[in-house]
Amino acid sequence: MTVPYKTLAAVAFASLAGQASAAEKITIMVGGMEKQIYLPAKLAEQLGYLKETGLDIELLSEPAGVNAETEMLSGAAQCVVGFYDHTIDLQARGKMVESVVQFSQAPGEVILVSKAASAAIKSPADFKGKTLGVTGLGSSTNFLTQYLAARAGVKYSEFTTLPVGAGSTFIAAMGQGKIDAGMTTEPTIARLTSTNAARVLVDLRSIKSTVAALGGPYPAASLYMQTSWVNSHKAEVQKIATAFVKTLRYINTHSAKEIAEKLPPEYYAGNKQLYIDALDSGKQMFTPDGVMPPEGPATVLKVLATFDKAVEGKTINLSGTYTTEFVKAAR
Image (cartoon, rainbow, N blue to C red; front, side, top):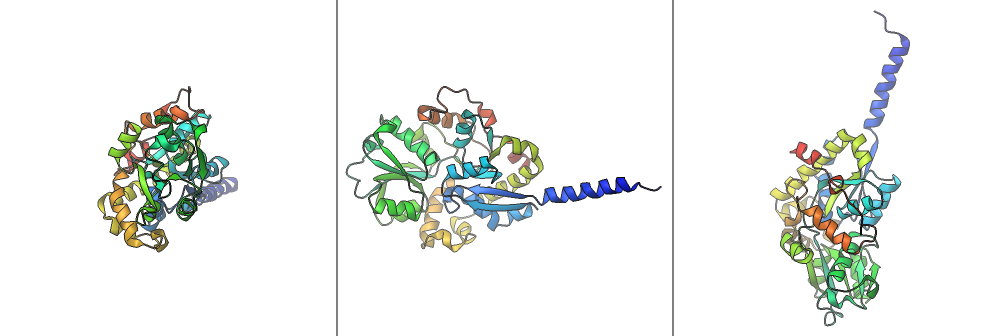
């Protein structure tokens, strides 16, 4: 039987199109790659799990989660490693985004008070008239800072938030007196507290302390994507989700030292042991399997509805802000 030329051409074209689709670059934008809260992103790459997917995946870093979110919405990235709370804020603004893998069940952040302002700031009630550092305006550090202030009776108009990033830029801002206090993550926390340049005021690194400060568990670091992209790329999403579930399992079953050994030396910020110690005390924040804590979304919505004008008074469909479909299939 002779196959018509047009049919052969169609088959060849379909084959090439399939190859092109498989080779399509997928960009994962991370809201600060060196932050320990986003450790699974780089670790998945270092362990070879992202390569095992067979996909062309590129990891890029932005200094704040809000910048990473903007890159996704503009089409420059397909996925974001950032805080789950952005999915709720975005739904309130008419954009459907969902967490596909939930990395953590606590923010992994603290509010630090500088040595110079230590006597004046004893609790969030003392934020009035002060300048507080956040990674970026519209970032999760900004969200949580606003909530802690509001819960203590301080209005947003009564203090100033200044975007100072994380790491060396945060440390410089505090050392130069540009901020009195600020919310940041490891390893920045350890770098400042180990030299007594700052002290911890509010600790959101463990589930217990998070519940005490926020009134419930607060799922934070996650892998999120636009719902339309998830629905049109289910095979790719499953491969990526499986890679991150394997990474979370690795974190759960290995010591902080073993994990640190897999990372590039620059992640230690000049002090490897300090990095290991911080990770050892904080890695409990990570979920063992990527599944969303059942009570978590309601806590996040409650927090955002307190001060976020976009969310306030809106009906939010929490089931549309995350999915467990892919992590459960990965298990």
